[in-house]
Image (cartoon, rainbow over all chains, first blue to last red; front, side, top):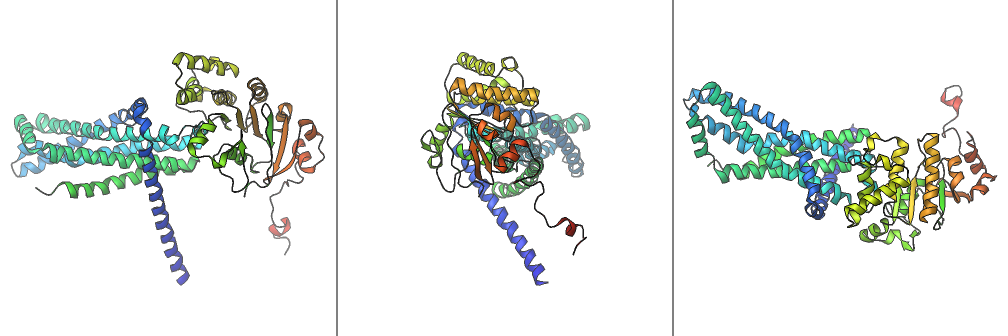
Length: 264
Length: 248
């Protein structure tokens, strides 16, 4: 009996040690990316290419999701506000929900599933097919040439995607609230303009999306670079990217929100 | 320890083959020469430089004078054949685009694939991918080219073409070629010297003629593809009858 307990304690301990070890390696990997980022800016076309892959190719899912989330917010918000006779405040509800929370968070979750998984699979397959090893043998540093441009491409794309998500979401709320239900057009926009603060709401939202962009891209790149060079290894790494990124986004969102918004 | 007591020399302008059964440490040897692994003891000199003692900058400087052909080519799948061959020229030189174009076409012509410059790696056969990778590995006119199983999975025509190319490029460029392979018949046609590695040690070495005439049991089994010998057919196991429960 005591052996069973000891074994389970050992197993938990081994998992914790392994998790801390991986965190350390990931932190070192992040440091290396920053250290070798010079080429990403000197040869900016490498980064532009990654902005296209991670950002532009994610646009469809971001825009469509943003529109639907905004439309649902419009419907649900109207139902609740109507109870208190404040349906004119629908614009405020939709815009604050999107700019402060749903824009950065949902866009980051979609970004992790669409672009994060693609980055992991691509790097993992490059490793499995010896493309990374070939690059090293050609005296080209893969961190500087392959990893860093993808990192900066992801980090630059994320706030832009979150902004577009929020913009289409607000448009979705407008379509449902004003066009479909008939909330007053002027109240919708003017109350929104009066209530949304540039620094407290918009800039904090942008800051959140930058932090999420760093987290998702580093996780995706690390998982790909660290993946065992087999089909199963790449598949597991891709799954881990989506799961870890999603948890990181939600955890970081709570921490950032706690620091940013004081209930004022 | 994968390799022990290895002592070999590869001279300029020679094709050296390193042969041995799968898992004997042949590819590890190439990784040691390329500086991807460091030996725990002993020394490894490439053009007089101790590879293990180099820092990253010096190692990269040395690697610019080396080429390596990976087992399945390892072409960059997001780049065309042309861009693959131009990769090192773009990364390591400031040559104008017209000169890069001329050099790439010359290298592709040397492997017979000038006409395939615009194809993507996914559109190439295994043999063609290997030849493009060969063109890429000679882009900077290296002094040493390493080939990791260049004949694996090729049809007889591609096999002959690849073997001839290795010989011809070695002679015309004056490079040193180290070929890791277990394809005896194709290799013995074009190599200058052969090392047989088994269990991490050199079992035999000599010219192609000496190897063909060798009476050493391991070499004889390998050259003639015999099923049983010093390398047993059966993986070590307990007695067959015991395994089947016929004997206590």
